[in-house]
Amino acid sequence: MVVPITRTEVLERAATWVCVPYSQNAFHSNRYGTYRTDCSGFVSMAFGLPDVPRGGLNTVDLVVVSTPIGKDELLPADVLIDPVGDRTSRHVVLFEAWANPWRTHYLGREQCAGLGTVRRTLVYPYDGGPRGYRPYRLNHVTEPDF
Image (cartoon, rainbow, N blue to C red; front, side, top):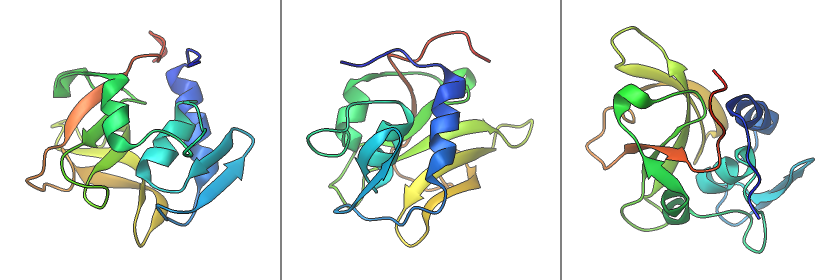
């Protein structure tokens, strides 16, 4: 069962995974449960999604429990997802805030190969790459919170 969660709670939970090493096969435990240490495991933990039996949802499953939104609708604790490809190319990033008034860069948190869990400024939609990143809002995030 998925319990409603506020945007503040999502960001607080995400902040507990500082410097967790990346792996699609490993798990990390904290007070919120045991989750896979990949991008979708990290986002599953931040949103309080079920951690069993696979350590959180995968990137494709995150799309299923989310609603597509427009760039102008992005709020803290929304996500940018590229669900296309295989398990080595799909990715999800937790959106925190716009980094400039032109909305070309944003502050995001992600779990990524070679870096682990990081908070960094990214080019919208994701480092300016041509891939299929789109903004989404997870369905159980309560409004308003910001």
